[in-house]
Each structure stands twice: as C-alpha cells, then as structure tokens.
Image (cartoon, rainbow over all chains, first blue to last red; front, side, top):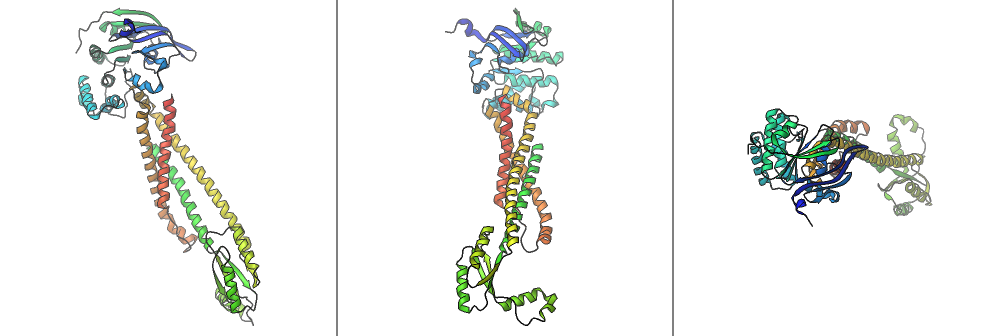
Length: 238
Length: 273
C-alpha cells in the first residue's frame, strides 16, 4: 500500500552508501525529495554532491541501500529499462557535455530522437525550446563556436526538451559569469514553475540565497542537515 | 578518415597478395598445360599395331590427346632445333631415333602420383620401349606447387586475421576518442541500439570506402606493372589478370564485414561499462 508521503515523493533514499574502491564517497544517506521541489545539494568539493546525483540516474551503481525514483526501485531495474529511467531526468553539467561535432539543433534534438519522437514534432519542439533559451538564431552553430553561457543555455534546452520530471544540475553556473549564471538560474526557475523537480548540486551559497528551496547539506559523504529556505522569485523571467 | 586509410591500406596489401597468388596459380597452370609424356616405341611396329597401341593408350585414365611422331619427323624436328650445330648430322648414316607417341594429360589431373601411374601403365604395354616425362623435374615441380598452395592459404589466412586485427583496433581507438559522445547519448536516455546503429552504418560505409580506395590503388599499380611482367617474365605464355569481379565483390563484402566487426567489438566493450 502506498502512503500519502510516498505518493508525493519523487526521490527516496534509504541508508545509501557508495564507495570508490576503498574510499567512502557517500555514507548512510537517507533522504526524501517531494515532487516539484527546488532542491540544493550543498557542500564543499569532494563532499559527494556529484556522486549523489549520479546515483539518481544510475550513472553509478549503489553499493549499499535502496534508491527509489518515481516509485522505481533502482536495485531491481533491468538493464534494458535504464534508458527509460534516464528519460525521467534532464541533466545539466558544469562542463556542458555537448557533442562538439554536432550542431546546436542536433544536440538538442538528440533527446527526442532517442525517445523515438517523429521528425516534425522534433523540429517544432527544438525551435520552440531554443527560442525559450534565447538561442533560436544559433541552431546551425557548433558548440565550440559558442561562449560558455551560450553552451550552458543549449545544455538547459537539451535537459528540458523531453519534459522530464526531474532536472539534475551539477554546478550549472560554476564556469559562468554572473550575468550568464542569472540567465541559467531563471531558466531553471521557469522549468520548476512548469512542474519539474529541480535538484542543483552547488557549493555557491549566494546562488541558494537568491533562489531558496530545500537545502541538503553534504559534508564528507554524510548528509548533515536538511533545511528549507524561503523562495524568492523576485526577478524571474517567467 | 584514419579508419578509411587503415582499411584501404590493409585491403591493398591483402588484395595485392591475392592478385599475386591468383596470377602465380595461372602461371603454374599454363606450365602444367605443357606437361607431356613421351612413349618410345619398339622397332618394327606396323600400321595396325600402331592403331591398336593408340587406342590402348587413349583408353587410359587422364589422357587428353596423343600424337604419333615418326622417327623421320623426330629427326627433322631435332635438325630444326639444332640448326646451328648442323655439322653434327653430316656423318649420320642412319636415323638413330625411335618412333614415338607424345601423350598430353588432362589439365586438371596432373598430380605427381597420376603422372607416375600413367607412365607405368604406358610402359607396361608390349609395344613400348621406354617412357620419359622428366621424372625428377616433374616430382620437384609437383612438390613446389603443393608448397606454394599451402603457403598461399596460410599467408591468406594470416593476412585476413592481421587485417581484422588492425582495422578493429583502429576503429576501437576512433570510438574511444568518441566515448564522450557515446556517454552523452546514454545520459539522455538513448538505448544501446540507438547508439549502435549509426556506428554500425559508419563501420559498413568505412569498410566499403576503404575497400574501393584500396582496390583502385591496386588497379593503378596493376596497370603499371602488368605489361612489364608479361613481357619479361613469360612472353606469350600467359596473360596477367586483374582480380575477377567475384573476387572484387568478395573483398568489398569482407571489408564491410571487417568495418562492422570492428565497431561491434569496440561498442560491445563500451556499452558493457
């Protein structure tokens, strides 16, 4: 029987441990993230933020414990269902992870092509998303010809085009100037308003103060605190 | 590009060997066609006896055709062949050569044992004095042919394996350099098949292009080399041939298979991770 708490949760972890060889990266993590939350995973470098995100989309296997994503127990997911699990996520990286040999259009379209969408729908959605992130005039450009801020906007477009339930962003503003960082943050707020759960791993305390939300503090692989900071959408573009 | 160059060079080497092997076999076959046995007749055989003898020889296995050479004709041929030493024949009071029958064997059946067996059968006929067929030379020649065939197959197999190994490794390195692209595709929810299929197509196309480039290079080299080889090596005896359309098609398909196989092996390793 599903209780009301489980019903509203999108990510649940129970006593999760993760090791890289003998090194303990995550120790006894238990957490609960509700649908449509705006979550920050905060901590210094090496605290285990990126590892925690990877466990959500099976970028790393769980060494011990249970992870439930939208009701799916990751310990029991068959290998061939992993791509379907990953389509629940839109993932944004600090280093953008765009395919340099493919155009902006192709990079963004990849998500829908992988999901088997029709060509006409792909064309329509890619143009619409690129308009949303302000990159509609660069669809034929290649990533190396774009600035860091522009590349991250493309990465955001790729992350949201499939209407994922969860957006994971690993230090999304880490390599950007303040202006570009503000644009990316506004885009993520917009996705959140439209119903997605947004999880951002960051060590930038100023970023958290600007936005507010559910803050999980990681220290040396342990979840120290789980607090809520009031939302302040004073400069949202949506 | 690196993959195509590697495939084309591998195909060039392997198909050059095939070309050499095919043409050397052709030379050997042309030599084999000249293989004959000479049966020397006892003196005093009349026309009826000769007719019976011819029928008896013709009835033996592996005999293609035969030709009677009278002692007069034999002497005349000898004189023609030795026209510069004609003084040797001046003091000849009678013809010392015997009548003979020249026996040609069927082209495909000249194993050493068969030649020996045919010679023994002919020699056993009562009208025959002696049979000659260059016993020692034919024995060595047959041995060389067997060795050549064996070496050809062994080298062909080695070339094939080396080509697969080189191409598969080159493709592996190329795919390794694109591992981030594969990783990104997996992160956005692409299935293994979605990732594999474009790489497989790429492997097949690279294999086909590599084969075409390699074969074109071989053809250019063949045009330059063939005329001089034909003239110097064995004029008029055989024609230097390029690979047959069947062989060309086989090389193209093998090359495509190798291109695909390289991708298959490399991706299998990547997608396991």
